[in-house]
Structures are given as structure tokens and as C-alpha cells.
Image (cartoon, rainbow, N blue to C red; front, side, top):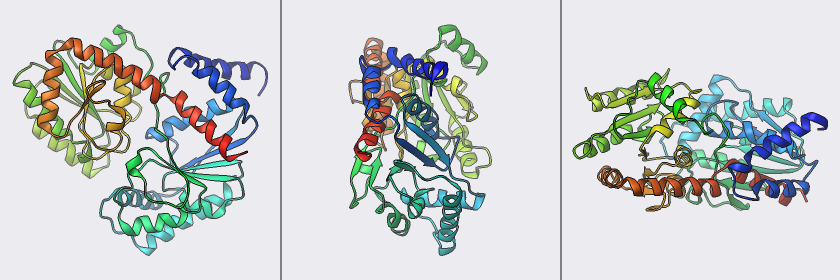
Length: 406
């Protein structure tokens, strides 16, 4: 890449100087000098939707701007394949699922068909999650790493046995949380997911922009706001968030916003939403928002307008909504599921709780002590700056490229 295009890409990385810790961008330039010209292929199953695709959409151009021959391929499959993949993912995370021989054949067929049309030739290939994992059978050279975002701590045995057959053929595996990993005869790495501070969901917003967006969503700002951003899923425990709010409401006049999606064409999501609406009853201070997948600006404004953020998940992957809220300077009261406890420093950037009662107690404490809440929010933002920004993620990937393409 030469001329003005290369300069524009380089300036885009320079835009992160104000967000990242001092020296980070210069370090990325020096690190990239060691791997310039090497090829790095990312493969996953979706182009849009979910944090993984969101990060890849930014990381791949950043790698390219640093002189890496970076590409991103997406598995092409039919609805039957994606249904099977979802069943496999659910089973790997401990849900009891029917997993038949016919389903395994559907999975293998789509992987085989994609292997025939995708260019799998690269110095380093990173395959994300279970969907494309069987592509390892068709490797053409280079080193291959499997990147897993799922909680594999207690998988359904048959599903894990099926997937493990492919995973052990990789050169390494990456997990998001230490406790998610299974025992494997290959090297394992811990790499946290990340947020992009310059994306629409996380960029700075003026007070006027926040107010205008909240007005459009019908959210008054006349009292403290408790917020939970999560799809309407039982594992996110939105009904528990309502119960937390009701306990707090006995002591402090406040509002609760539950902002999520995942309801359209999903009977389970519809059922959870109905349960939330039943729990909310006629309380005018509970706002249940169904947001579309592209509602990044709305989420940004809600997090900036909130007083305290909840993450009451009882089962979670990594839960980047926690880092998103902390980046906006908000203390987060969260559960112990998944990567939530890896993001919150208990008593410093927020609180880790084990029950609805514990969540309500910590929220009341923060509302009673606004100075503490503000200090925690400041510490939370700095914690994200040092650990959960995309610039750190980029450094991790450049380091892997250096290690595995000597």
C-alpha cells in the first residue's frame, strides 16, 4: 500500500493515541516492523452481529495498515448449517442438546464445500469458534490457531468429543477466560476480547447528543438511571435486574432501563420479554427497550446517561458490555458469570455480586455515595484503557504472528 491511501490508513491508527496508553501506538509500529509482509487470515461464520465480527471488522484493516497481508473470510452456509452450529455452541456451553450423526454430516459438508472455494493459504490462519473449526482438515500450510469465545468448562460430552477431534489438530488455541478452557495437548493462550474506543458504540458524545438520543428514546433524566444492556435471554437475567431495581426503589427514587434485542423470530426471546414486562408491571420508571442490531449510537448514549450499570448475567461469554460501560466512566455492578469478574476489579471499578440482594445493596451504596461512584467510574475507564482496548488486542495478534511465523 503506497501513497495517500497508506498515509490515510496510518493516520487512522494514529487516531488512537488519545485513547490508548502512552507509547502504545509507537509500540505497535515497531512490533509491526517485525512481521511486515506476512499473511494473516481470519475465518469465522458471520460477517455481522456479535462482538467477534465487530472487532474483526476493525482489526483486519488495522493489521493491513501496519503492512500485514491481512484477510477475513466468512463461512458460507445454509440455514440448516447455522442451526446445527447453534446447537453445537449451546451444547459446548453445557446445554443439553440432541446431536445426531446427520447433524455432524451437515456440519462437515459445509466446511468441506467452503474449503474448496476459500483461499486458505496464509502464514497464520486464525479460525474463530466452532462453525469453521473443521476447515483444519483442509489446511494448505502455515500455522493454524483456533480462537474460542465460548465457555467450555462443562460441555456436553458428545459435542465436545466431536469438536475436539478437530481442535487438537491446530497449532494452538486461544480462550477469553482461563476457566473456559478444556485440557488440550496443544499450547493455549489467554487473550481478552476488546472494544474499539473510536467506534460508533464507544466514541465520545457531547452532552447534547446524549440528551437528544435519550429524549428520542423517551427516557427522562430527572432521577438516577440504572441500566442493563443485554439481549432478552434468560442467561442475562433481566427479571433479576428488575428485582434488584425494586429493592433499590424502596430507598432511592430511580429509573431502570433494560435495553436489548434478540426477540424477533425467537420464541424464547419473546417469552423472556413477556416475563420482563410482567415483572415490570405498571411501573412507569421501568423502561424496556427493544433495540435493533445497529443501535450502536443509542447504546452509547444510554451508557453515558446512566448513573450505575448492571450486568446481572447468570451465564456469560466475556460480556464486553461491561468494558463498554466502564469506558464511559460508569461503575458496574455485575455477577460472577463468564468474563464479567475478569473485567471488574471488585471495590475499585465496581462490584462483583452473587445475588439480587447483593446487587441491590451495592447499588444503594453507590447512590448514597456519589463521590465514590465518580471515583470508581474514573478508575474503570483507566482499567479499560490498559486492558480492554482494541490496540492491546492488535498487539496480541501481532505478537502471535511473530511467534508462529518465524
